[in-house]
Length: 318
Image (cartoon, rainbow, N blue to C red; front, side):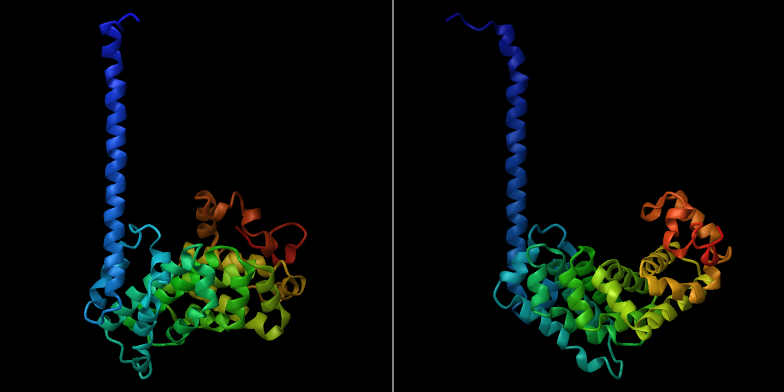
């Protein structure tokens, strides 16, 4: 066989070098992944040691996005979930009367962040739910103190529930309804910070978007008007302190309620006047311009709030 011309050998060299470089990069990436996983495993083991737990909670919560498959590791490692629950129940005595310190709040919120990781992962979400772990968070959502430690605790707890409802799953919604999550969310929607109100309203919105949730809230006048009253109060408060993000979720709740015929009839009489006039017109225009939530025009934005010609008496003016 004839020798390959030197010119062809020279041209082949860059491809060989590129292949070697790619292989080296892949090997380095795999090595980094292995090191991160080893670090995660070490920290998870530390959770079961009371003397090392606080630092492990801090490090894992800070780096949880870097640790791939941290949720299955947390769930399947011996004693880890029990250690996280131990952290949660340890502060129950300081909830009432309210004596929660910032340090206590931060530590428990780190544990809650890890539980949120478990609640978010497809392999552990239903295991988390079937173990009824969300119930351990409800005492935090039932608090009323507006101090920063309590507000941080409520917000992080809502984040765990929010992680559960992000994925459309009727079984998740049914569980939350059976454990009376709606009153707890309504409480936060009334007295929480803007961010807590936004997360709580998002949870109610996701519950309403499920047919089971909509039926549950619209089954009795008491439930419907409890939700409607809180939404109306929030609308009134937004007139003084506007928040397009919060308003977006409130409107979506009203939109979904209007899909129920009886609720739609009730909204003709109890829809806040501020949603009928031009109070939020500039805010709504901004939402439309930014395509927030996929809204392309004012009619799709407020479809169920009766901007459409078929329901002129419940119209929004934009």
